[in-house]
Amino acid sequence: MGLRPNLLTRRTAGVATTTLALLLSTAAVGVVPAASAFSAAPSKATCAEPADTHSDARVKKGGVAKHDPNSLSAAQVRDREADLAAALRDRANFRTGPGAVTPLASVTIPVVVHVIQRDSTRAGGNIPDSLITSQINVLNQAYSGATGGAATAFSFQLQKINRVTNPSWYPIVQGSTAERNMKSTLREGGKNTLNMYLGELSDSLLGWATFPQRKLTSMDGVVVLNESLPGGSATNYNQGDTGTHEIGHWLNLYHTFQGGCGGSGDSVSDTPAEASPAYQCPTGRDTCSTAGLDPITNFMDYTYDSCMYQFTPGQASRMITAWNAYRAA
Ligand SMILES: [Zn+2]
Image 1 (cartoon, rainbow, N blue to C red):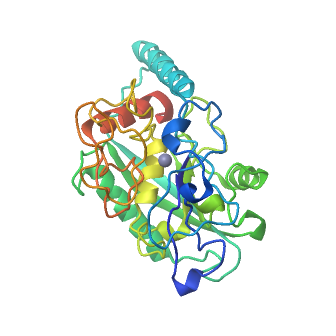
Image 2 (image 1 turned 135 degrees about the vertical axis):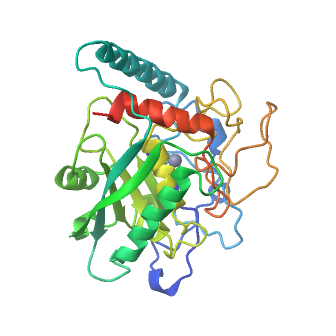
Image 3 (image 1 turned 180 degrees about the vertical axis):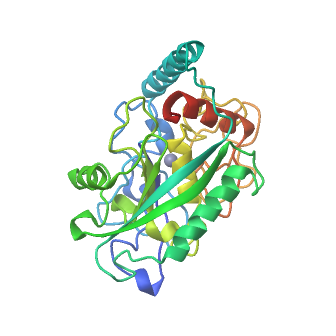
């Protein structure tokens, strides 16, 4: 699972509900920055994201974002890396026998989009199809390297838009029984099918995702703030890169700030270590003494959509390796 916090302040008239118009500033509520939270064990620990210094920052009364569950503890990363190695061994053994499966070099991912709505209004989640097709275009640009990063093995094909009006699922509350019910009711396809759930989200979040697992569960998929789609109203986060980011997790990428400055970091060798998430677009940021500036333009950081435009070759390699371990037939 992984969350991307929604650190925006929305002033757009059409979305002027109090639950939307927030910006979480942890500095203002005196909580620790995320950099000190990586040793925390549980993936659903409640902890805070660092402050965004946007001048319009407002704090939801008593509100602190749940820590992004895609920011794992060191132990969780060790477990996941061991599982990946085991899954690859199993696949390799499978490939030596009759009917051996050849690893895939490129993949077209079928995408089923579930538009969760409270009612038929835009504020109630009724976003037009055009935003969804634009999102698919953004994904294909990002994952092909057309925006300036490495070309990955992946392309995306919209298979279906499923519109669901159900006020009890809106907003989508991360980790709730309602989320579980929603996904178990709606999820379609096999391990290779990307189920994307769009709606207003709890806890001022932009999105969250599940990492791949050997056993498919109905929870598998990504949840994305509807107004983060290209052309949506989520200022600074409305070019579709929340989708790009969450799908990165679904394809087994960690955050670039995973593990901070030490250890194996995000388990990718060509993303320089970074001590904590970067917000907005802090050009020249360099938080670790190891080589390289912070990868603030990487899709797996927390910067503005306008700031992030690339995956690295190492991330591309990690994604297709994980695909063949977990999601290939
Ligand atoms: Zn994330």
